[in-house]
Length: 112
Length: 114
Image (tube, rainbow over all chains, first blue to last red; front, top):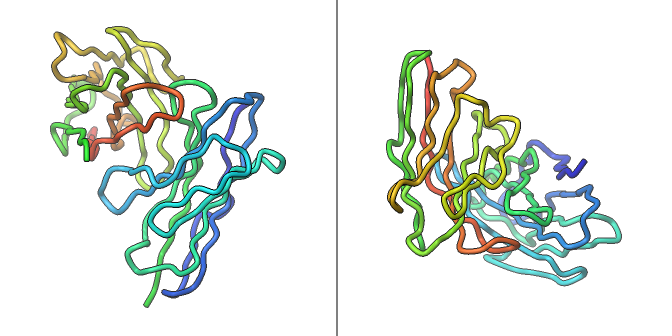
């Protein structure tokens, strides 16, 4: 069935270091959109990035991701993390319909 | 930016009681959703709603659950009767369209069933 997989449950980094949060997916659909949502403690999830175009880099707030259909991936990266980046990050897809399927989430903790 | 409001922010009830969660979606949005998130875990889709009808629901959307949006007011999720496993944070979302249109999420209602 359709799924979104995030391999890291917890990531702890020192401020200023780069980060890469992995997201892979499995689907039979060809026309799908992928998202990264960020959820700070006790807040609503907010859209960080989205893409439906193969091999096109999307960027927002210092984060970037590229959808690679050849490897079924949509990894999230940032070159230098900040304390305020500490949050829960969800990779998600709409799989051609209106609902969003979320990955399990990666909790990113940034230390000074 | 556009905001989705949810009322109440917290609700504590006894098992077996009825509860109604309220969502005030973005004003010009046409599609409405409910998601369930157990503490620290991923959000899971419950149901979506368009033009006065449920379009799709997941296995988590039990028979005890119902949704409606009477007269374009609040989009509601009713659980009757509640069970212990219904304890979670329930997020409402809305979008103007589908596909890769952004879904805007509310701050959630934390439901505790005792």
